[in-house]
Length: 150
Image (tube, rainbow, N blue to C red; front, top):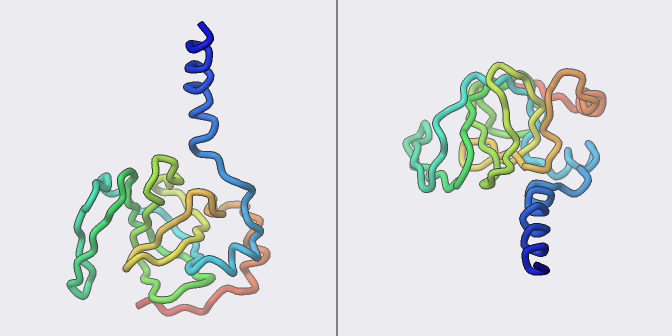
């Protein structure tokens, strides 16, 4: 009976800890540590990423996606606050877990991340959030880049 109790406690606690994050960094610290900060509109949810999916960059280089879970998202970049080699239309991926931040088609987001080949990788526990009413814009508006897309 005692063993059954411990098994049940363990099973019910799994969900509580699987996708928990430590407190988010401040916007200032996130700005410093992110390679890319952009406002985006999600245009399309692409097919599920499966292990070792292969895509090709515009210059013909092969990119192997190693994600185990998740969907790639095709996005339109609306504004750039930080980053290099940003194109008007890009692909965003979540981290390789089933806790990935879910971007919805048609919605707009403020995205913090890093470059992975020619795609933006977002952090599960980062500051990526809906664009509308986002308090980070007060800090970021002073750092907005004049940007000509490649």
